Amino acid sequence: MVVIASPDDRWSWIEIDLSALRRNTTAFKRRLERGVQMMCVVKADAYGHGAVRCANAMHAAGADQFAVATVREGVELRRAGIELPILILSQPPVESVQTLVEHDLMPCVFEADFALALGEAAAAAGTVAKYHLIVDSGMTRIGVLPADALELRRAIDFHRGLECAGTLTHFATADVPDDRDFALQLNRFHSTCQAIRDAGLDCGLVHCDNTPGTLLHPECHFDMCRVGIGLYGLDAAETTRSALALEPVMSVRSRVTRVVYPEVGAGVGYGMTYRVPKRNIQVATVPIGYADGLSRTLSNNMDVLVGGRRQPQVGNICMDQFMFAVDVNANRTCCPVPEVHVGDVVTLIGADGNEQISADEMARLRGTINYEIVCNFGQRLEKIYV
Ligand SMILES: *Cc1c(COP(=O)(O)O)cnc(C)c1O
Image (cartoon, rainbow, N blue to C red; front, side, top):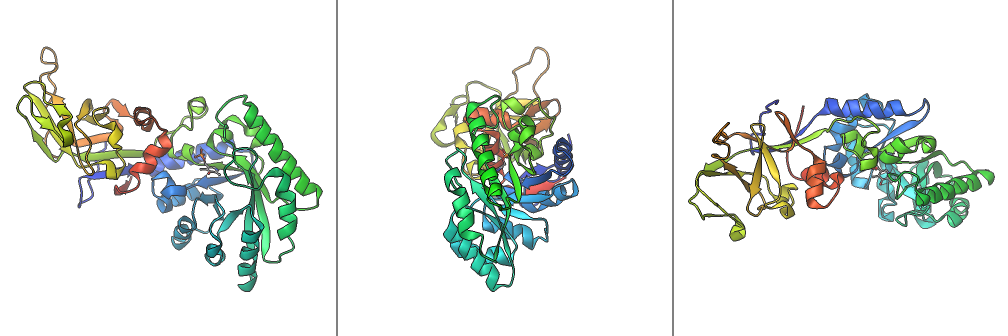
């Protein structure tokens, strides 16, 4: 295992493997036919991995455009000097139109009032604002309904401050093979684009595939794919697992800050939900807690890796710390379990020796998906790029 120096103000950190990120990005880019663009999705601080550093690595590995969720996320990329096109995957508040124009950020549009305000702001600045028309083809999240799409385009296209640079939709079931709802969504999207073209209007770049769509539905790559989770080396779903070999980019590590051999019966943590059951149980403390993204729902129900071995987490996870137990006598007959020491590296996500804990394993234990695991860890822990 590569031992990385901890940040000097805290014993916990996230390791971001930028070369794995570049290899994943290249692997997706190779899946796209020549001429199909790759929009790398770096919303939520690149799914917790750090948007600016990741976007730069993705750019070097073939990204054509970026997508974020909020205006602030777009501004952050622009301030860091990123010049590729940036799409905001929402229609932000109308109050933000000035900022969009100033930083050359493309919003998704599904309402005329917003689009016209954007056009006004652009015209006043002597420029043209690009936007993407977002169609709700069946997910019932955001977008103009297929029946209203052409009318919306007609209601805004006269404006000299507006240019439609793309038309998109988002699938609810792209990870389900041979899915009827997917086929319905695709059909509706297809007809909507066709109606716009038949009216003599330009759709701009047509795009709809996310990570599972890109892997399972190459027939819908169209002009661009919007790839997110796969770039970070995680499988979008069970069904895409075998489609492309990916390398996880994020590891979560910390160091033991204290070890003790409590008396038999001693309680551990708030509520004392774990009691030391016998002699020679070592209890070690680790400075990561639920405020760092380690959900309290994992209390007494997860493992950590130390010295290449799995050890059980014990007691309720605190805001900034948790404990784990080492049964030092466990394998006395053959191979004794070594004690842990203050300063030992503890791995929550990632590899240590031959053992590994994946974001998927933690997601299963929490009843969620790997997306939420990495987003959560990205919120407070310092990132170290390797
Ligand atoms: C988040 C998002 C994506 C990327 O999804 P992944 O499953 O992470 O690839 C693509 N398109 C839209 C509209 C999104 O919100």
